[in-house]
Image 1 (spheres, helix red, strand yellow):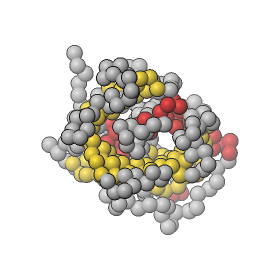
Image 2 (tube, rainbow, N blue to C red):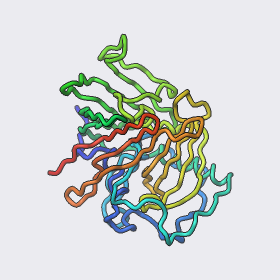
Image 3 (tube, helix red, strand yellow):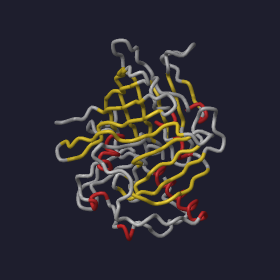
Image 4 (cartoon, rainbow, N blue to C red):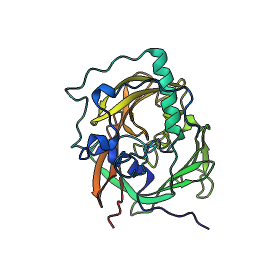
Length: 330
């Protein structure tokens, strides 16, 4: 029997929708007042049970209304990422300057935060379609239709990203990311364009092999699996407002970066649980900004704010990629 398919609200999309939109009261996001943002240290032991697991978290309508499921970059997220032109950037003028964190406490809280992110798991199986829009440095644009799928089981959950056939594009590129509690991500990639590749036999990728573009876009395989959350060195840099949300700024360091790959990722994570990533910057070993991830657009559908589009900007190539989800308006 096939698993029940949820409404076309993809785990990814819903993960960021309520985070980005500023039209709801701050309390709807579980955002505390300025004087209460700096909470007591977490316990070393976080709930046992990432990856896309709601780490691209469901951002609930809060204590006052029912909680929406979310994705978060794409493991996106994304998972990934994320902004609306109407969203206020930076810290509010009347907010106090962030208090520097003790180094030991910063590492302890970072480990606990990452454990919570990785423990988050989608509650339902979902499928969705959309498209990737790629704009190169010369201004040339192309679009690739895509299909997204999330499947959850008692022991793990699987996210699938697949390109579909369109005029001028053969499609057939398929990435499967397997997430299991306490285990590294497993990556399986089918790319018909590779020499010797077949449509049926996926290639197993190691974490070092994930620093490659997915289907020629600015989203790398590592981005879609939120691989940086699995790096051994994690610490909190500070706590501040981002996109009008109270966030913990998490620094993830890759001890052995591959040439041209990420050496460090700085992400802004919503303090309140379930957590969501509202922005991320990725740097190379020289400290140069490689890419920047943000939400691009949200739509209000039947009274709920849903993420419609996410953006990845590539500082090295000057290109950009937007992934737009097909929202159900029924």
